[in-house]
Image 1: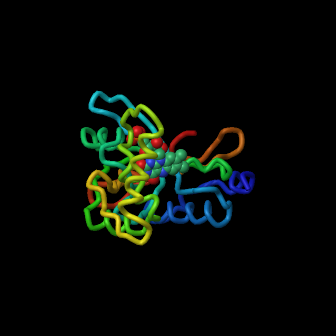
Image 2: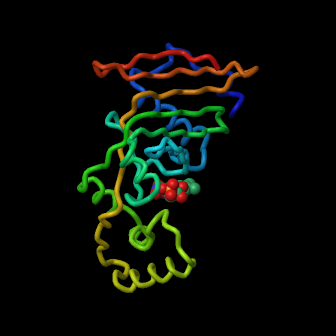
Amino acid sequence: MREQYRAEGLAETDLAATPVAQFARWFTQAATEAHLFEPNAMVVSTADAQGRPSSRTVLLKQFDEQGFVFFTNYDSRKARDLAQNPYISLLFPWHPMARQVIVTGVACRTGRDETAAYFRTRPHGSQLGAWASAQSSVIETREQVDTAYADLAARYPEGEQVPVPPHWGGFRVAPETVEFWQGRENRLHDRLRYVAEPDGGWRVERLSP
Ligand SMILES: Cc1cc2nc3c(=O)[nH]c(=O)nc-3n(C[C@H](O)[C@H](O)[C@H](O)COP(=O)(O)O)c2cc1C
């Protein structure tokens, strides 16, 4: 699989008109041809107001021309970083295909209606989990979260509607650059980067591997 993609390479003439359309092509290939496990798992990097970076894996839940959407706790480290510094990087490490995609852009919170609509699609247990965990805070013991979860499960049994936690929701990343990296022989990889233009269009530039 890796060899096949290496041999194919990535040419300017292959690219879709927008980075999101190109991402859709590669994402479909990752899911349906390469059968990657969780191709929507991406490394999300943020930086705090002092410029200190941090990274973690998060699942991409939606993407379209408006941007790339993920959901998390708004009190988490990443969300606190984003409140101070909205610049963000998303990296999709599709190693078995010798590919990676790197998105940079600006993150803003999704609206409450959109968050609520997505929250309703989550399994009951995940909905309770969003309430039970004060994500990124230091806790004394494992029992603390287990007890919090058990209390919530008693209050909201299966079938009962769980309210959307106010401290939980989505971020939409509006892309400013999107780089498509295709591994090639002898480390002579293809790197094509879309860069947003002020008129709303995209410029494509080739980077040295
Ligand atoms: C495969 C995978 C998927 C994950 N998906 C999410 C997610 O969608 N949202 C989320 O908040 N955390 C997700 N996590 C947990 C994060 O990596 C991270 O531990 C958590 O968001 C807290 O990060 P922070 O303290 O840097 O804010 C995922 C972890 C893994 C390994």
